[in-house]
Amino acid sequence: MPAVTFRQDTCTIALHLEKLCELPVANVRKLFAMMLSEPWNNEDAIQRTDAFLNEIVPESKDLWHLASIEFQNGWRLVRNKRSHAPDVVEKLNHNKQLTRAVKRAKAQYERWEKIRSLWAEAQQ
Image 1 (tube, rainbow, N blue to C red):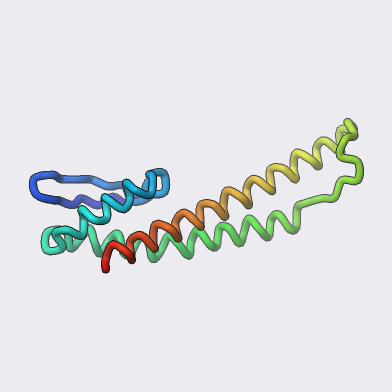
Image 2: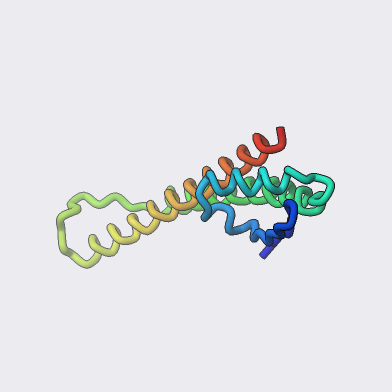
């Protein structure tokens, strides 16, 4: 798991970059501002964060694309959704799993995009 360590005044912060998407936007913004407040002290952290974000965003987009393809190939039409027949229930469960996977992948991609935009905004 890629982690960066940066400093601001007397505070030292170890940040696991993969966990950024779990933090609230305000906290991510504050962490980026802290990291960029002393660029001469945090050169390595800034470079590694930039490289990580430039790598994770296309990767998450690819995962979303793969989930979409799996959804398109695996989703099955069910005529009577209220039927309790085992094959219908199985198809419905499979369709729900595919739908959830696509939604989760899309949300993850959009979150990384937002974090990358916050990074670009913080650098200006």
